[in-house]
Length: 163
Length: 334
Image (cartoon, rainbow over all chains, first blue to last red; front, top):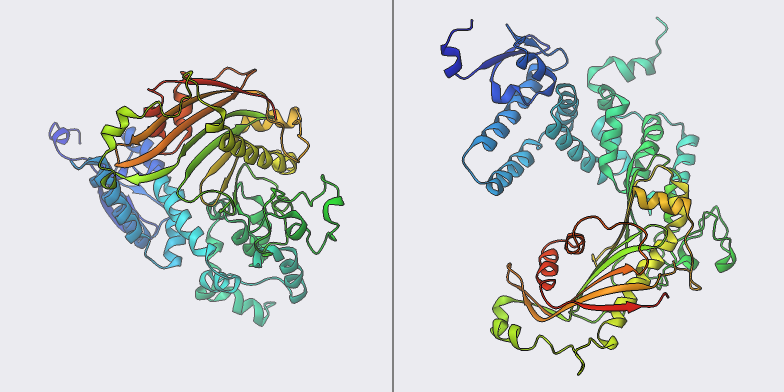
């Protein structure tokens, strides 16, 4: 395992999703997942790391995100251009349905990727912010568990929010 | 078995599962924290029981005030209006800043609205813009910090803002007319700065005064920013300053605002100031205000605290102005 060639080659790690799909990622990507950082640094990441809370669909997206961020930050471009590029990428990346967004948010929290977590929170918040109550319920499939009388009372309590 | 039709329709079909169910309360709360806007948060409370129980726990709230006339706007349906005679300390402590009512959109004061949120740490209040009486084209930016009273205030004013392309004479004028503001004795006449300095400070101290009930009610608050929609003035209080006000009540002036202590001020002036970004400030004047008796050490070197208060490009403008002659002035408490 610890041959001398390993030093010159790029280190890769294997991440296994909840549904058993194995992804190969470079170290620059893997270290962005704070949850496995210690495993990597302690060289305990062999043969693969199981990520029990993340499906392959979501893990693929997370890896795409981390990869782009790693490449942009290590590329030779100036900080302002890199910033612009990341902003564009992030906007594009968030252009998915709200179900995926919630999954990404939850995965970013579990994997401890701060920037992705904040990005998904902000995006979800703005989705909620500009919508009516009925739209929010519909969009996220939230059941209205108030009785008619209760809802009337709550609407009255928060009447100032509807002006 | 025991499951009714409604149970089945609720949970058994994967398609119909509440998407938020996969998020624990702590995560959902963090999303709510990113919403900020108090009205959007209020509407969220009506979405479901879970939302209703979580939303009031957010720690970050932004209140955009629609109107600021207490007589017309602050009494809600719950509290019968009684004009100015109602007790100050009650929930009717609305935003009484002496503005005219331009709408009756909000029938609830920020104090009342914020009652629903018990855990606020970070609060931002935006007042409507467009204070009447400001001349067209005049730039004024003030940033004031308060504890129990005024801690410091920085005011930048320019009689006009022009872009470099329109000001062919900039460098020449820059050298020649620098002392046009001085009188024969080389002093700055009071008429040159007093009016807008005092009006900024009155505006700041009135805002500070009306924040009292909110600060008293929200003990966890550790950052409070009040600003107006056109970004003219910003009042801020950090954790220590909020604590100071809680321990040591403010002194009020006769007109429902916090008494401004006697002040020492520094003033810098340039008839034309061209900024690196091409913006040219005409009659650029910077005033840095502090109480004559400052009990607290001011951190950092003398110049830094002034420039760091202002947003770019005005921080740069402040730094450039401060390389010029400094006029020292004093002002009595008012």
